[in-house]
Each structure stands twice: as structure tokens, then as C-alpha cells.
Length: 414
Image (cartoon, rainbow, N blue to C red; front, side, top):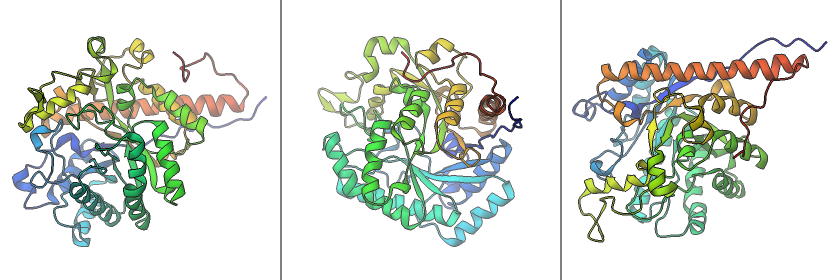
């Protein structure tokens, strides 16, 4: 008879990205009082019964280089950094953290930090450093963002650019005791150009290449990935295979955070355009030239939206065939695979719900509350189910020498 191991499942905390509701605090109220939006979001998050928020920062529309009408999503500057975040501001926000009982997981600023225009790049880097300073004052462990891409250079040349330009940002993070967590969205609609991969940190092969550069410069501990399965689905990947690839390569430690956002592939769109997305006649080019109308530039996102639509967890139908085809996220296996294959602290790594399902992106807090509440509950229950399966199978049964039934989803299987 084997040893007796107690059944002790370990659950992940659940949070929400504040970009889910940009207009919780109307701009006419939050612009003159820049910390009001954070206070109100913490109270709103408490009503949703989440453990934490991911605090969204962004260049204010008045100083952004991309017009608001050209963006797929509204500007989400819950954390307003037009003026530096001070100790007095931090004291006010931390009081709201304490009163709400909701913590801040990290500060998120998603932008192109390898922009080919040197002045624009400098502005974005300066803003990211402001976000880092705010993270320190708020006592959070990380900032989250993109790497970006220099559109004037090849992908190999971007590795050189990363080493020359992005490593100094990671050194700034190291000096502050922070991680920089890269979300892997390829950002295909960021520009009207032909590139699909406009954020070079888009896939495990590239994560490892970038991390190896970081290793040379003693900032390897600063570079981590904020994994989002929706982007894997966009590129035809599945979570288990990605996690297995990292484990096989010795990089199972590389994930420092997780978004829970899905993607539902449109089979008709795939039939028409393939996984490269719509390449012509989108509306962002007029008579062979890039349209001068900023609103037209949003049509560049048809590189992505012709293929699929973002899923708020729980809003898509249960579709086992789609899971097997990597055309929507297999949430249960996502959570199982993380425990089975990754090296991370389950109890301190939050699942951050990111809401980008277009029909449900209502900007009314009362209408949105039950939508988010349902998705958050789904996320929490899926994680609890996966944690229970993992604890039972790898703990209780394994200790007693009892085999686990069946095969389960397998990495690399086609």
C-alpha cells in the first residue's frame, strides 16, 4: 500500500484588467482628478469579488501618437501618468486598496517600445519608466507590456535593436526590483503595413531568443512572459504544446503572469484568407496609398478580425471539436497544463480576466457588472476544477500508486 497524501488543491487568484471598462470614471471627472479612476475601479472590482486588478496605464489621448479613432480598443489610462506618480498619490491609492480589499497585481502599459521613430520611441520609454516608478510606489512586483517592432528593420535586425534599446529598459526595471512581463500579442493591425508580427515577443521561440540576450546582460530575471492564450489561438497554437515546448527547452520558469482571454476562430475567414489575415482591400489603403483618415487605419485590424473574435472567458459555447483544432481555448486543459508543465508559484500568480469581446464591451458599469461577474466566476471555477484534478491525480493517486485513467490532451499532436 502506498503513502497517504492529503487532497490539497492549490488555486490561483483571479483578477481583472481595468481596460475592461475604460469609462467607469468619465474623462471629464478623471482628467482633473487623476487618481479618482483608480479608486473607483478598486471599488468596482470589490463588487465583482476579484482578488486583484491589473492597473492599465496609457499615454493620454492628448499626447498619444496614434489617434484614438485608429485604435481597436478605447484608450485605457486608468492610471494617469501625465504627471509623475508621487508618494502622496500612492498613499491615496494604497488607502483605496486597503479599504476595498483588492490588491494591484501589476501596472500594464501596452505600446510599441521599438518604434522606428527615435523621438516617439523615447517618449514611450520615458512613459514606461514612469509606469515602473508608479509600480514601485504601489509595492507591486512587475510592469506588463509589449516589446514592439522597428518597422524599418527585419526581424533579425530587431533582435539587435532589442539588445541596444530594450536592454536599458530592463536595467531600469532591475534597478527598481521589478519584472517586465511581455504579453505575446503579435499586434497585426498596429500598422497598415504588411507585417503580421508587430510585437517581436510573440511566440516561445522568440521568447527564448530574447531571454538569451537578457542572459548576456544580467537582466534575465527581469524578462518574463505574461501569457495570453487568445494570441496562441490566433497563431494556430495550443496552450499545452506551448508549455511543453518551454519545458522541453528548459524555460518552464519563463511565464510570470497570465491573462485569461479567449479567441474564437471564424472558419469562413480562415477559408477566405488563411492565418495570415486579410491582406488587401481592408479600407486602410485608398488608391494605393495609406489613408490620411485616422479612422480608416483601424481597418488594418482585419488582419486579425477577419480570422477570429476575442472571447471573454465563459461567453463562447462549449466546443470540444474547436478545442482539438486549436480554434478556441480549452480552458480546463490550459489550467491543467500550467500545473503539469510550468515552474511557477500557483498561489501568487493571478489569472487576469481581459475583456475584449466586442459585442459585450458595454461602457456602462451596471450593464457590464453581471457580464464580468459571470466571466470571473467561470474563470475561478475552471481553475478550481483543474486544481482539484491535478491534486487528486498527481498527489493523492500518485502517492498510493494508483494509475490515472485515459490519455488526455497531448502536446504536439495533430
